[in-house]
Image 1 (cartoon, rainbow, N blue to C red):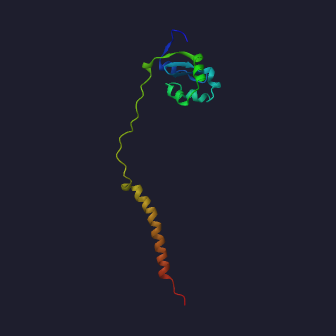
Image 2: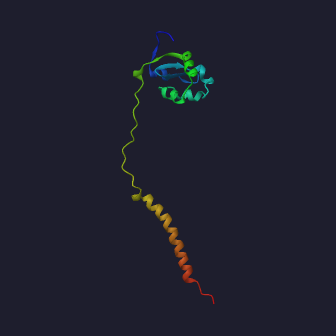
Image 3: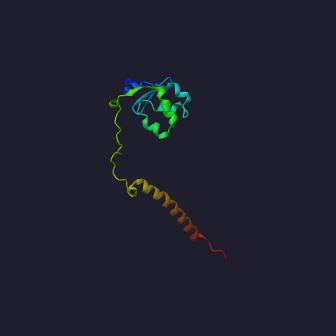
Length: 136
């Protein structure tokens, strides 16, 4: 790696997102991994899916070996301008009223689907019992 590194914006790096031109951002550095796509043990789709964003978490989550980390030097092309990478925003679900299953029409329908057949069965048994002629 040279003393002076080129600084890229996220928009510039994001343009390199195909199998013929694939760049990744890992730990604030930009890597051109196009030559490595076919040799990557996880397949090229893993690398292609990490383009256009900071792929540091993706890289670290896999647990690459020290030799894989050392190999990255040959693909280094520059640094990323960290001001162009959006900060991570914690997801907060939208506020929704509490769902009370006992007061919904779906609950009534399920209850009726259970009780109506029981009622019909009871009615049939009752009719059969009261209309049966005694055998002598």
